[in-house]
Amino acid sequence: MKIVKAEVFVTCPDRNFVTLKITTSEGFVGIGDATLNGRELSVASYLEDHLCPQLIDLDPSRIEDIWQTFYKGAYWRRGPVTMTAIAAIDMALWDIKGKVAGLPVYDLLGGASREGVMVYCHATGHSINDLLDDYAKHKEMGFKAIRVQSKVPGIERSYGISKNQGEAYEPAAKGIRPNVESWSSEKYLNFAPKMFDAIRNKFGFDDHVLHDVHHRLTPIEAGRLGKSIEEYSLFWMEDPTPAENQEAFRLIRQHTTTPIAVGEVFNSIWDCKQLIEEQLIDYIRSTVTHAGGITHMRRIADFAAMYQVKTGAHGPSDISPIGMAAGLHLDMWVPNFGVQEFMGYSEKMLSVFNTNWRFENGYMHPSDKPGLGIEFNEVEAKKYPYQPASLPIARLEDGTLCNW
Ligand code: CS2
Ligand code: MG
Image (cartoon, rainbow, N blue to C red; front, top):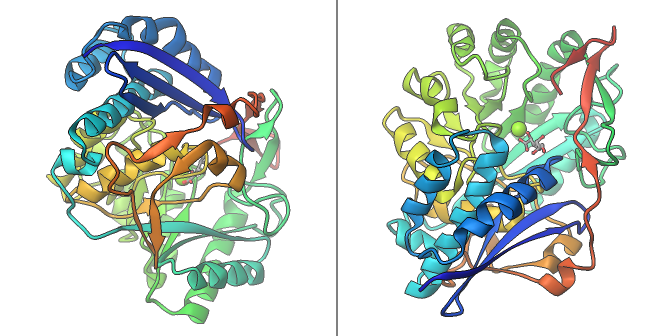
């Protein structure tokens, strides 16, 4: 069997998604997610102008050899654009392999290690009271793990809070120029413990409560935060400080036992090697879509298992349902599973991606259909052309550019 066609589709049902479709000489079709929020066209071009022409006539069953060829053969290795492009090809080839074998991808990886994948949702509020209402709503929906984010008094617009209470959150605003949001670590550090205190006082300690700091603190501030919220027993505090300097997490570890999750912006095992082998983190957040696909994410997960680090994959709505489906297959197999983020998708998004996954009582299952178990509707996709969109930037009160 040979690859005879490799096509890239950029569509925008409420937000931009990039999809790769690989067709073989025997009519098997595989699909992969190549979405990189705010840089979609960069990945689309990397695929269309460089990798797709090289795919023609290759044997689709040789997933590892194709992965190695596009990783080592690029010379300019790693980076989010390169690794997202490779990931899309990898996902599509695993999808084909499953369809040829008549098996779901998690079965090809080694079979199910659990009955279902525990997922966490997002509860947000423009005030602590709004957050408590949104938390109760998600608890009612059956979620056992809930991420909490609230608007911080005195900070007008910052990560994780939609413009109007209750509307779906999409960080990338339409248009080529990023929105400017604001930040104050001092206001946030004084406020955060009150948020968790209100959640635990009202709902108790049975649920898993998570929180995303989103790279915005210095290491010592992150140590202060972790220490100040230990009594609330978080499942994790995420991205407490930027992770380019992996040893910065040694300082956080010296001050707090609050578990740490990092890695959604990572794209290879090298980005997290020190964090994992020094056990500076408890969960690795890297995803199939941005870290080289199932083939590379499986390597990262196995390396993490040696150090008792669990997976906690990124799962915002700016990873397409194809990437989510591929991630759920990995989650079903991976022995050192922690939790899977599931922000959810709009009706319009799901009109383009026909999923077969199941959600029940806080757990998800990718489906037992052969391959990834998801279909891409090209006719619907054509209704929603690409729209330029950019992630925000953030500035301190004195105007200094800071981490968003
Ligand atoms: C966030 C993401 O879900 C998360 O943990 O960090 O929503 C992130 O801000 C977006 O994926 C950026 O596109
Ligand atoms: Mg995050």
